Amino acid sequence: MSEKFRSSSFKDPLNPDVVEFNDKGVTFRARKLIGGTDNFVFYSDISGVEIDNGLFFSTIRVIPRARPEIVIRNFSKGDARRIKELILENVPTHRPDAFR
Image 1 (cartoon, rainbow, N blue to C red):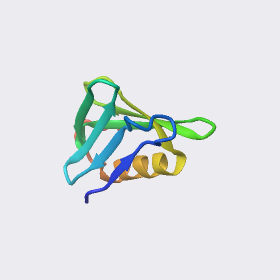
Image 2 (spheres, rainbow, N blue to C red):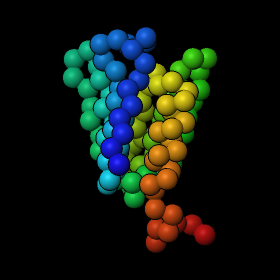
Image 3 (cartoon, rainbow, N blue to C red):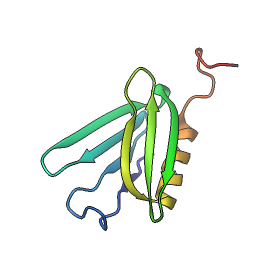
Image 4 (cartoon, one colour):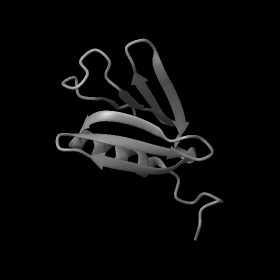
């Protein structure tokens, strides 16, 4: 699996945030005018995904275990739902530390 999503160029045409999926995890690229951050998270290290919907765009919050949350902004509502869906499909459901 290899899918890539870009945030809306309407809000920030030069520096879109990017979410890129591969077989082992997800890369989150948050761009800024100078620099930015790249975060790779294994699916097994993700404990939750939240979506904050605005009027036109959504903010996605990924909550990894033992790390600060990752926030990516300005995705279409449809892309945000699809990103959350893909992450949750790949997070292992039978982890040894999962609550029962």
